[in-house]
Image (cartoon, rainbow over all chains, first blue to last red; front, side, top):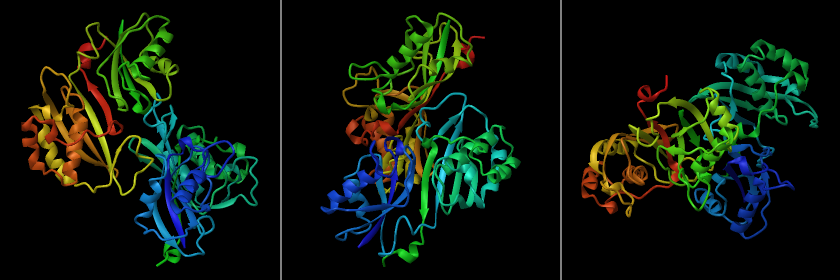
Amino acid sequence: MKVALITEYDGTDFVGFQSQNNGRAVHDVLTKALCELYKTDIKIEGCSRTDSGVHAGGHVSSLNVPFYIPEEKLPMAVNALLPDDLSVKKAVYVKDDFSARFSTLGKRYSYSIYSSPVRSPLKDRYSYHTTYKLSLSKMKKAAVFFSGEHDFASFCASGSSQKTTVRRLFSVDVFEKDEDIEIVVQGEAFLYNMVRIIAGTLLDVGCGKIEPEDIPSIIESCDRKSAGRTLPARGLKLEEVYYDWEKYKES
Amino acid sequence: MKVALITEYDGTDFVGFQSQNNGRAVHDVLTKALCELYKTDIKIEGCSRTDSGVHAGGHVSSLNVPFYIPEEKLPMAVNALLPDDLSVKKAVYVKDDFSARFSTLGKRYSYSIYSSPVRSPLKDRYSYHTTYKLSLSKMKKAAVFFSGEHDFASFCASGSSQKTTVRRLFSVDVFEKDEDIEIVVQGEAFLYNMVRIIAGTLLDVGCGKIEPEDIPSIIESCDRKSAGRTLPARGLKLEEVYYDWEKYKES
């Protein structure tokens, strides 16, 4: 019996999803709760690692379970064993060939930026602070150039070893949300730090250091140094992982 | 020379504004930074205490300072000496008769509630979780009964010693904000735990335990036990303190 768990977490006090030697990983905390619930060894597979400090509104893990707990009761049962900064939002029983990692069709991330002369303690946990006044219209103009299939080598952390740096993004949008700016990136798959570098580049566009029309040549250069800097983890959130749920759902 | 500082803080790791024996108070952390900045003893007066865990978007303190730092530079100068969960948003030089505590015309608080089958780690820090589906329209209907001058003894923490429990509220409003519910209370002055008890009572209305029409008799009873429970501090935020700034501003 296989189940997919959709989890939400505040990444601040985690070293990311994946187990690390140096701290508290979502993977480990979730595994511990599940082992306790099912009274046996449970191995979970995550849809992806998230970096230290990155938040998730809809991370997905899949796991084989030894007995049935109704879908609507499973989240509460696991949550009773989880700390405050991690919770299971939803459980879905899936067919055996479902893999949280390999069945994904894509992911949606958001990056939040707030612009203010002074930092805001009530925003800092989930948003990046800039003192620049940002041009939303310039950022919107620049964002459209990222859609589609490109070699995103300019937007990949240097030193990461990937077979190819070609990726397909479905869309990059920039919105105003309350008084803040939210960058929403949807794509098939992502390179290491890709969203945080795209956000850093759009920030440079917003404050006038880069013109929107420069984005195509920054992409074409395939040079990490031509893009903006990697913004901090706190502003990043894995919002949703896409699957063909109809195909994998256990009826 | 007197200055008013408008501060924002994440109340989670504070025991409240006022100095306590048992932990970190906003008053003390702010005073320490100001003493360091001005290289002398600074005494600050706060507009009000906030309870342990309560947040502030616009708390106000007033203080005499030994030398002039331009209004627009003062927040940054203090913030450089403050921890991440506290910041000065704005500084205003005021006349000597201004008192953060006694010159107030009123205050605005907000209380945030989110309704969801499972708790949300990304909301928990600033919002109260209920598993009930709340009726916004019932809550709106109930809210209007709180406006005006009433004896709010039913909405005052028992055991608190006040000369009178009569207070005047300008308005109580209930809004939908994103998917959550925000209760906004504006009033001249407040009793101990008053907003958190009003929020608890409106929560009971929202989930059908109390009817909107019952509010007048709950107020009239002057009996703490007739109102709802005190909701936790985390959902409460002191949004703004009202003053006649034109009168007190140093030109």
